[in-house]
Length: 64
Image (cartoon, rainbow, N blue to C red):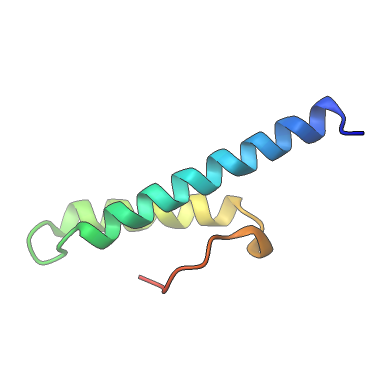
């Protein structure tokens, strides 16, 4: 049986995964030559979110 802490951690992980996917999509749609600052910010946000997700739980994408 799952404890309340397990459920909270699973919800947190799902939220992080959704954020990661959203930022990845945003980054893939941003042209770094047109808006370099926005591109760098999105890269940084993606790296921070990625660091919070266990490696075996990361969604699989080609690296940006």
